[in-house]
Each structure stands twice: as C-alpha cells, then as structure tokens.
Image (cartoon, rainbow, N blue to C red; front, side, top):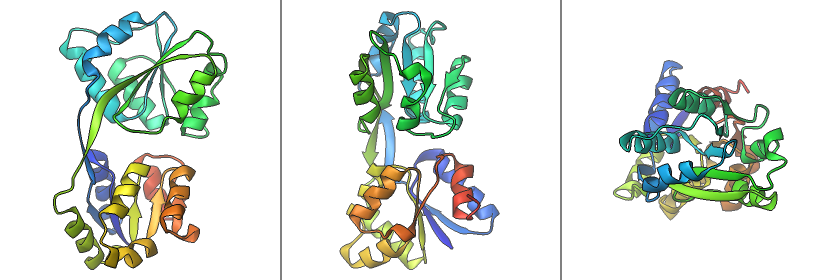
Length: 250
C-alpha cells in the first residue's frame, strides 16, 4: 500500500508520520492552504451579544485556532456562561484545551447528524447559536437548527485557498510513485482532487482505494466515479482512526 494524504496542515503531516512508522510509503499533498477569515473582527462583538447559556459551535481545529487568536489579540476571552460544541472527540478536547471550559460533542456519530441528536439540540426556540467555520462548508447543521427555532450567526474564521500551482503535475507524480490509496477528509478536497487530476490519469484515480471520514463524502465519491467497494469510511476523523481504517483495524 502507498498512500496519498490530502489532509491539510500539520494533521496531514502527522498522519504521514504514523504511516511511516508502520513502514507504509506515504506522500503528503494538501490541496488547500488556510488563511484568516473575513469575519474574525466581528467575533468579540458577536460573543458579547449572546445571552447566558447560548451556544458556540466550532466546525474544526482551524476555526478554533483562528478564533482564539482573534480574541486574544483584542483582549477578549471565551465567556464562561456559554455552552461550547464540536463535532468530534478530538476537536472537542482541542477546544477545551484552548478555552479551559467543557465542550460537548456527539459520542456515537461524530458528524453534524450526531451533533443534532444531542439532547441540548432538541429544544432551540429562542436560542442563539454562533457557528465558527470556514468560508465554505456544509450548511446542514445551520439549516436544521434554524428549523428548530434557533437564531444562527455564521462567522467565517478562515478561508481555504486552493494550491493550484503545479498541482496537476504533483498528482501525476503520485501516480508514478505507485500511490494506490488516497485519504480525503472533505467534499471540497474530493472535488479538487478530481478537478486537478489529468483526464489521462482518471483511470488510476478511480481505481485507487479511497479512505473518507463520512458516508456523505463516500456517496459523493461514488457520484464522481469511484466504485463503492473501493471506498472505506473512517467514522471518526482523527488520525488514529484514519490509520486504523487504512490498516483494516476498524
């Protein structure tokens, strides 16, 4: 097995290191870089306007990092009278470490659907929910809590900038290096992977085993051209779970 890891930033590098410890050849090729989002300057005022016991949901570690940095730079801190949420155990632990407050997360299904199943999400009439997110992303959680009566404020904490320079050539090099397995952690990465792989390399791309982190990404992969038998789902997005899936331990 030779693995292409498309997960961005240090988490992608860390997964490659875990694979190398298992004597598995791996290449780290992120398809995006992250930069500061356009709404961060509004974060202090948005948090100030929240009522006691309102909710703050961070969609990713990047959102947590950029938001924490923005608050620190302006002399603000995370309020202790709010409830904080993340979509998975690892991101919740990371959020807790940044804000030193408990962070709720879905234990069984680390997805937006799992988050929506939490008891705290069942009665939301009049509740204000701030969502710390990227410039683009899935709107399912926001749409559902709106239906349940919540007031929602979306804050772009970071934006994903495509790494287009030489990306087609780099993906072609992955083919020539013998890559037969690809790790994809978002629909956006999946789309970009297909977009920047040359047409002549599509037979190779769609023959690769794909490891994804949700049934939604798996379904999109099928729509784009992968066979279901070539798609493995890690139901948690942390690197250890991804490694276990790659090693067929889950």
